[in-house]
Image 1: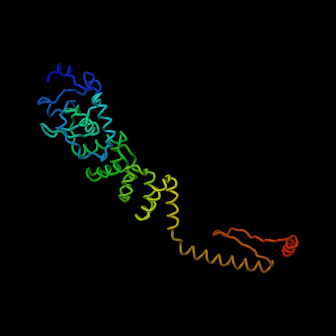
Image 2 (image 1 turned 60 degrees about the vertical axis):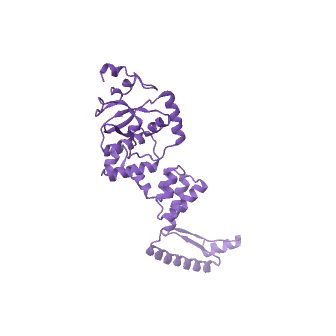
Length: 304
């Protein structure tokens, strides 16, 4: 295909002569043919039936209503932003990113779709699909967590390296990965937006799955806020704390001494004396009286 023909290539539906400038100098080759095979960093119209979906796609759920809306827009405006693919062989391509546009284009009845062709191995495929979706904020927390886990296991990355690749702090990556330790019911609720990541992070701190599910059911039934869930979890944790046996023994011994002091003082003053003390030995003595006469009697005992 000659350069002159390239410059005058026209398409129906929104991508025409201005495409080259929109794509920062990437060459637009029009409909792909034998002369454009094995070329990379180019834009071409590719037959939709020659494109395979991305097996590394981190997004597992697409809103059908949103796809229908996008399809209607495509019928009117065309594909504004090309999808990205890699070439597998002469007549076969694989999506790297842009599956929503690809699915919507099929619904809209398009037979070809503009695509940016580039080279990518499996690791790059997974990384690019993940990063593209995260940048568009299109993944839910569980999809992000699963994608992070795949990068760690399938691409042999460490968490520090993963954080650098996706532009996140290591603690952020860790918080997402911890979500995968939650039972399936809670993960599904998080995926379906029944609870937020804040709820899930609080539930993770509960020590057993049974208790996690109990609190989770309460969260959904009563529509509890994240702060309320955090409070429930703290109460559970405090209730489960076992007292130090030595501290308990020491406190019991001290408590018995306080009772003996109360008894002696009550006998001496002829009224119920109350002695309160904390573990640090600080406290107060209360001497009640019911009349002025009784007060004077107590003062005499005190030599006041």
